[in-house]
Length: 244
Image 1 (cartoon, rainbow, N blue to C red):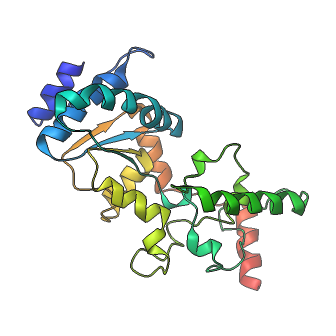
Image 2 (image 1 turned 180 degrees about the vertical axis):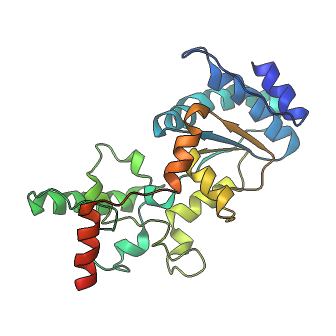
């Protein structure tokens, strides 16, 4: 498989590979990807369907391969992980740059519960952000409920963007994208890859090679990005928001 991937990248050919779980597929495409990226001085994008596989690649597979291949490649390959803005804490929101969180059109009302639990989670999040280097939600252990995370994050539609936000210089999302532009391997997810392709925004660095892992989920993930659902609950929430 590694030889086939290497040949496909060097001859500009498409390649479809199917193999069983635990056969080392990730290692088989990462080795030639690292060599191709370093030798051609252009990034290779690796896209996965799940955050779990992202974590495995970035935290386990790539560190081992980078250490092993550095002497052979002549330099240490650089690796970056890029996700959508909602996965990162927003410094502008933490600084009070957005109004209090309101239910969104496509979101059911949160279940009732002690407000003290939400407050404690938000306080913990604020303390975590002060020491975090990435602001990536997946690095917060143990995690927090979605409702708490929304108090410190924004969606792509809510984000002011790097040109307008007063905190752009220290924005976790912007920093992750800046790092990606200087990296050899850029790991992302199918949803982010789809947005980059469909919306014409250069969120990923210019690249010629894309490796799509968990490709059997690509269609569903892309459809999910460009779709949403209306329900009686969401219509009621929209009506209530309009009345206010």
